[in-house]
Length: 129
Image 1 (tube, rainbow, N blue to C red):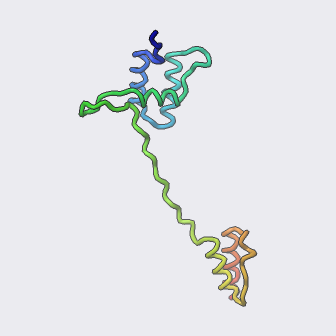
Image 2: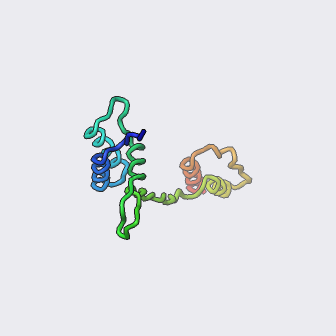
Image 3: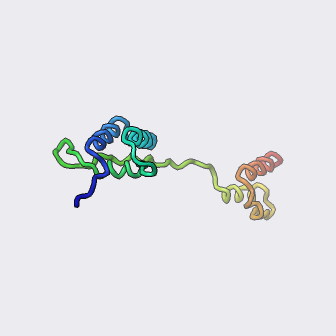
């Protein structure tokens, strides 16, 4: 007894065509999923979701330019996050405040204050000094 395939040849061909046309961005995969469900309707509750579509694209093979079999799906490029320069740390600001105020001032109780608040106190003390 053979298993009935989940995708016909026509469905696989259309899926690969849609993928080649739209790419692999998140909105593109959503569009491909909606298109496949509209063009090849399944029984209610049996509609394909994005994970199913991605799984089929990953497991569908085609030949590359060297004649080797490779997956149709190409993993999305992950954009590395660039570290933001957030200025001095709160600890650095509190140390600076202790230096500006002088007289053995302990800024530890102000550790719950925001950086903006600490900076404004520093500016006020520097303006007075």
